Every structure is written in structure tokens, then in C-alpha cells.
Length: 573
Image (cartoon, one colour):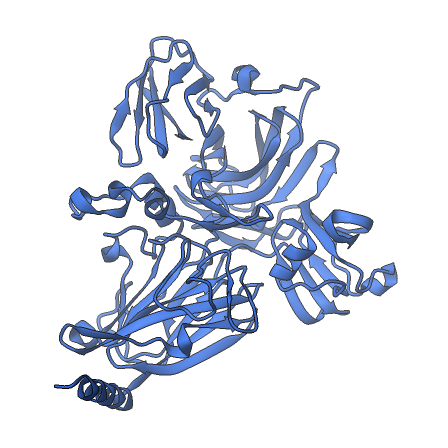
């Protein structure tokens, strides 16, 4: 058979299959920024023969709040969708992206850059079912969901979690991403979180070669970070049993952002009275370039809203220079301040209630797992975080500790029966500052304030609150610098450590790791385990220092056993 005849037959088969039945996917941008969708797929035209089928030429622009429906998916098509961020393309479609890049062009030709969150689907698979998932195997750059559109399919009987459900990762994993996995743009902002496989290219993380077996290749600490935050997403190569969804005959939506990702702390409007184009921003600093990357134009803000406990500083010039205006509450029209269409850079920050105190509302988390926001009857009104179970957590980004030293940390809590316990940590648990028990207050809206003292080196951190034991509600946290003593490093922190705290530094470490604890380190037993749970070192820590220079790069857990009790902290080599 000639090559021309083969081409004609293949095209005829494709046309026939497309005519037989087409499927639609609607892509929706619920983020506050423009993204550039990438997509690629293939179709089996005969047993073992696959041809590429990339609708929309494999890529297109999708502005904040916009959607696009693609209706050209034939029976049996399988492929993936993703959102590229921070892109800059010229009129010919040439350019690059900060995350998700597929070569140097707008149109993708089979390449998928990392890190990127993926929506994957196979139409008309086994038993004519569609199989779909959200994958973090190539890392994370945007919250995403994929779901069948109600009314377009016959529900599965009997129902189950993975039948006709929503696959997704709606938490912003860029907040709290381990340092060694972070992708940072030219402005220093974390824009993506690599998977351990794409970062280290190791068999143990990629499930390749000797580890190409589900019995041998198990979840690592890195994949558990993804899985804990996003239990319904694919976290590593053999995670399909806990992440693949099925449906029959549906049309689908792929949603970028939304669904409980990073909440907008401040919202900016093009027109007075909260009209026109709307852009929400998380806490952070935004130069003109960063504003534009978030679809906020120069000299184009006329009204704004800001959450309680935060302030917005507007600057007339770029890089936080020139005249400035501070707002701690909503303003329906900046004309009254003489500030209409003036802003060229801005900051969104927590409000410092005194010269050394910060009040953070519980519901203003940057990311969370498992909790629910509800109305509160506490004295300050507003909302609280509730339904906290063991293992739930909240993370608050960009919290500044201006000087090194001891801080009093207060928590506003309520608990019907008590028995709860929380821990305070920095940067996704890399440093645990202390633990605190939550007492019974006699009711879910009967509030009390509990506190402990912790020691922190000066810096800006992602602060986490983890439920070691659940059964409590949480309204706010207040951090106050106490005393006049200032320390330059962690050498003087041991006296202020909570009784059960374990501090490791420097973290990340190159060769010599220092251990500080709120208990005597004499004659303790210690071990270091890697991300796969293997013991790699059993050091002596009587001197408070351990040589880790021979360890490979990666995440490790340092465990000390004292009086039959385990104390664990993580570090990065």
C-alpha cells in the first residue's frame, strides 16, 4: 500500500470517528491572572497505531474569569490539559513561560514543562468509561479541578467517591513548598513546586529501573506532602488507585484556580463603587511587573477591599517608591483621597497592632487542609475556623518576625470537650516551634486564649498551625515580641524552646547539623531516615552536633528518643 493511500485511509477513519461522536471540554480560568492553556493528545486509529490530535493547535490564551469550550474531541481521545503562567509571547506566538512551558511557543507540540498541574483524561476506555484525574507527578503550579458536567451523563449505580466525582487539587502548594522543590521567578516569587522526580531524577522518586514496581516504589515524604494537601490528586507514579475517577458519556469542565485555593486578601477594582475589572491578590509585595502578571494595570485602581487584620499600601511609583497611601479597610472610591488611577506598585501585608505584635485572623490562611470557615459569636465577630480534626492544618504566608528572640504566641480557641492539641511550625514543618494543649471551654463558641513562648530567628516565614489532636475551633493568632534581648542566631534558643520542641539548624544544611532541644540530649538515641523511610544514619548527639556531609541531597527526618518518647523534626541536605 502506498504512503498516500495510508494517509487517505487514516484521514477517513479520523473523520468517521469524529462524525460518530464528539465530546466537549470547557476550560474555565478562576484565577486572578491570565494563563495560557496547553493541551496535547492522541488517538488510536488501529491497534497499536496512534496519531497526535491536538485541538486548538495545542495552546491558547485564557484571561482571568474567561472560559473556552472545545468540541472537537473524538471517541477514544486521550490527553492532558495544563495552565502555563508568566508567559510572554510575541505576535508570532514565540516566547517563554515561567511554568508549564512547552518549548518556546504558544502552540504545544508534545512537550510539557515542569512544574505543572495536569488534568488528564481518556475518553471511552475500558467498558466505554472515561478515566480522568488531576496529576501532580510533574509538580504543581496552579490549583485545578476536573469534573463531569451534571445533566450530561447517567450517574453510576451504586455511587462511589471515584465515580462521577471531582478530581482536583484546590490548595496552593506553592505556599509551603519545600525549599529545594521551589521554582522561583525573576522577582523572587515562588511560582511552582517541582515533584521530587522532576527535581532529583532519582529512581526512588520516579519509580524507574529497580523501583519500577508498585510493591517496591512507595510514597516518599515529598509525595506525601502533595497527597496530604490534595488527597484526590495523583501524587506519584503508582498512586492511580487513590486518584483516578470514572464517568460514562459526560461532557467535562477543567477549572483553573478557585475551590479553596489561596484566598484573596485584597481585591482591587478598575472603577469606583467596586465596579469594572476585578483582581484579587494574596499577601505579598507587587512591583509594576508583578501587578501586570496578575492582570492589574498601571494607574488603574479606583476602589478596593481588604480583609480585617491586613493593610494595603499603594505607591505612586514602581518598586515601592514615591508618594504612598495606606488602607486598612474597604474604600468605595479613591477619588476622595486624591488617589484615583495613581497606583504603580503596592504591598498587601498583615497589620501590626503595636510596634511588636501581629494579629492574624484564622480564616485568612494561605492554604489549608480539612478545615471549614464559619461565623463566630466571639467578641470581635466575623468568622472562625472550625471542624478541626486530627491532621488538619492551616498555613499563613509571609509572616515577618522583625528581630530574633522570644515571641509570645496567643491562640483564640474554643472546644466543647477539650483534648485537642496544636503545634506551631515554620515553612511546612521544617522547624517545629512548640506544642500547646487546647482545654475544654464548654462550647464551640465559648472562647478562651491560650499561649506559649517560642524563639525565632529574624526573617519572613510561612507559619503553620497543625492539629496534633482535633476537636477545637480557632478564631485568631497573635504574635508578640517580648523582652529586649535579641539574638543573632539559634545558639541561645534552647532555654526558650517548648519542653517537647526540637530545633535543627542550619536548615538546609551542608555538612554540620546543630541540634537544640527543650530537654537534655545526654545519652539519647537518635536516627536519621530518608524520604523512603530508610534509616541512613544513627548518630551520637551528646555534643549537639552531627556530621551529615555524606548524605545525598534530599529531605530527611531526625528522630530522638528520650525517656521512651519520640521527638522528630525534618531537615534538608
